[in-house]
Image (cartoon, rainbow, N blue to C red; front, top):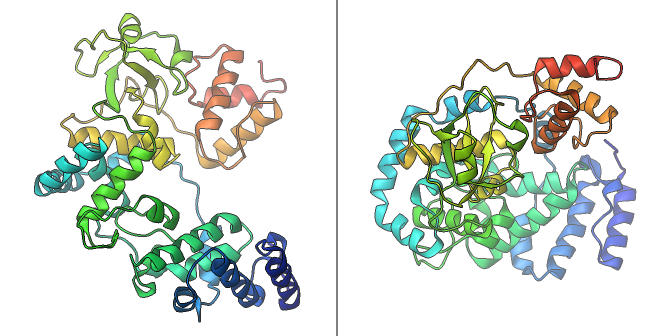
Length: 407
């Protein structure tokens, strides 16, 4: 990571003040230049309309925290399968607690669904996954964390926006600087909103004149619904349904980018998980195979895209949607037709390098099996004559390890 002297940071801050642009990312990082950068940021926040008293109360005395940078750099690669992650996160106690909270807040949740179109089970599922229904919201200094990450070189533009949003939350009167406590990466409240989402989608649902996503359950639930509505949630429509598959399918159609009416899936031999016939209607759905053709299978409806909008991790989004179906009355997910071997993070990274070398778009080599990498896997499977279910196997990895990828 590039480091800088205080002198060069002061020059960058001066140029930012003159031009109105933020300090250049090339001068970021390390404690030495932090104070000069922070002074520049304060001027930027004032120019954006944040009151001087808010800026001073929130940022005076804030120091660089090298521990935050170390944690940001030390994040491991998330590499659990859907069954592993959902088995851990959709635990019995969360199901019981979630059901109890849906009953406890039934009147509020019914009112929220009438206004925003989002069912209580969906909001409560995110509430449970994010913070165990508000039990674990974090207690770190949010402003110090955001300022450190905004000065650091890795994602300065993103966190500069988040720090400015945090100041606007304070300026609006929702929280005080002392109340801004949370995890190390700057999320806030019982739904772990980043400050920009808090500012844009927070709702004062208890009518006290403040949007308090740390302590007010009505504010928390309504804000979650408001955010999901902004992500395209469609009132009255399903989001995820477990299904049973025939032995053979056109596996290349199992893709979130491909929609077919349910009548198509019926003709292909797809049934509900209990074997019942699906409604033979025109409701569009994608076939989602989070662990390939041998693992659990779902029809993902338009509302599933709101789960991906909340979190782009396919495993997290599928787990959240599945959790919501359980809270809505669905049974436990099946294990699939056969055991599924998952690749390690290092094997996924090798797979990504091999795919990229052959011209497939996999995003970046990071050891994460994201949607872009899965699309590249599908294209390679099609070329190699393998079932194109978008899920990598060791067979695919071995085939790609050969010189020309066709043996």
